[in-house]
Image (tube, rainbow, N blue to C red; front, top):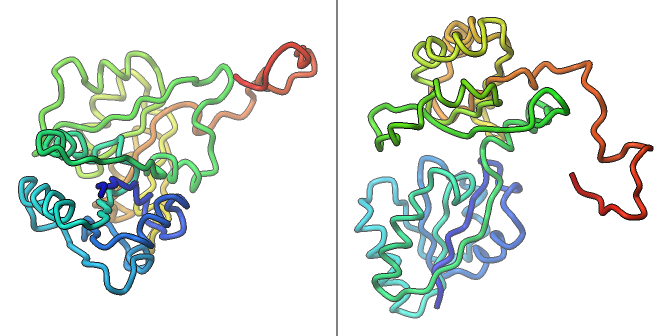
Length: 253
């Protein structure tokens, strides 16, 4: 049998992929992050499935349950909040499964930054305003950041930033980013995107700590910083330009 790492999406049960939903519907064991998984999502599992909340388990305990379930012939789903490619700890779980000769597959999910951008009704790549998005986090009581990956280094590019795991460090974020973006740079914060209690604030970088504090945001939030958030007079992209030779060019950017 196979272990399936499945991106659960940002929170709303109907934002899981069809493939992920179908895997849940036929799994016999499902491991899920308790603090981030809505009950409606687990309802896709068969009534007889074994559901394991991993919130109180260590990495070795989680992998042990994956290996045991596989050896016992069970189809296993390991739910990951958002998308497995971002801050999911899939890499270290997969490494251990490789060592145990346990096959696994990865199913993508809607990442939190994408769900948050949808809530804002904003494209994050606007012609001639911003064409790059940096997804990063801040250093706190967590895994160390590589020394070259600093907010200042990313901010020096002027690219749009999507900051995860930073909502309780907005004072430091503001202090580090203002010299590069300016106090008037547009910002937006989405907390609990697509979930009950979803909260959105918009403003400028210099006001970020006050905006977050007044909104009572403390968890599950994505902070966006960049001119694309308020872009208005930008040119149309070349994608659908009447000057484009569509007979000889595929529909791509």
